[in-house]
Image 1 (cartoon, rainbow, N blue to C red):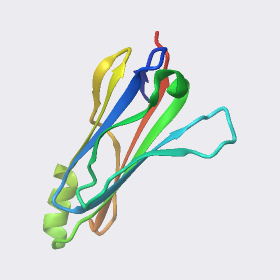
Image 2: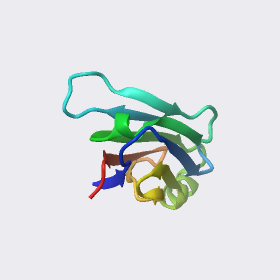
Image 3: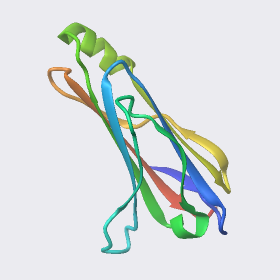
Length: 133
């Protein structure tokens, strides 16, 4: 499980998502309090078929500590099976957080699920948000 130290205070934590693919992609980022029955809060969505979420504030350090950030990206591949297979192996997701106690940190090893026919790929990145060591 990946973690990010948001620290304490009112500084805004920033999230950015960069999806590198030739496919059509859509991303959504949510924050979930695992110790509550409250629903997850959407903190970012991609606005075009790239799946990218431009850098944006997702909350203050105090409001995010002890919560989980989950980012899901679905990518539809539109080539033949051979090219889709190659693209499913090549494509990457780069997720970054900034302004917390750890400063700028990149997460680039999301869980990747590829459809049996290589027509789609799902990337899932989870980051537990902590106050610090």
